[in-house]
Length: 293
Image (cartoon, rainbow, N blue to C red):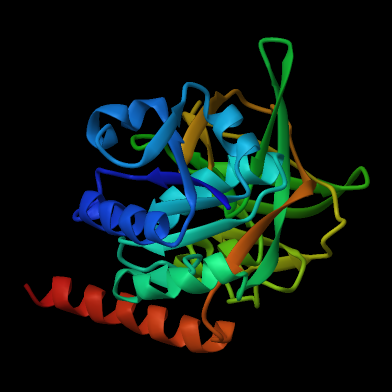
């Protein structure tokens, strides 16, 4: 089995757990590959290197992402384009989309035996024009239109089939998948959706309105979002945590279901609700601890 290993070495102990994973998988007979940028750190390991990450992913059977949720989501962009499954090993804080914790690396034997399940997760396709050129991105968690750090409130309009369906005065708007429902959308008051469901969630950020609740659209809905500000506020489009564009007033962002899906490998038989209860409990405990300091 050929495995692409993508670690985030900025995470505490990520290098240690990457080395442990490499050692286990090599002993189990895996062929291991990494991106060329990792050569200095792992040159002495039984790993081969590729200069281009797209070529690395295409060459392998499975992608192993070692880091937090952001690392796994970042790796999923490349993996989904090549129709390859991803196993996330969590060395971050929450690890909603991870398939393993660092104290469970012995379960990598099940991966090599083919004893695992694959969950397909819905993704979004986000398109907009900038400088006359169409830009298109694939998103697993969420797309966020928000004001800049020193900007004032935005007027946001959401349209469907040429009709206005929602208008908000707010700091921004979160459009998320069911997978992303436990991320920023949840913090903004949105509901938790089972990630095996399909739908598009629309959650306003700090709305200046009585009607400021999340709206859930069908998975095949095609939404168009535009924003204006009477204060000429800076508007930023962020996709899965990455700022990709500063938007002009009345520029239209198109959001719809992507033709791609993210395939997440699960080595444990745990249902989503058990994981959500555990992870949301961790988040609450962490917040309480920080507040009490």
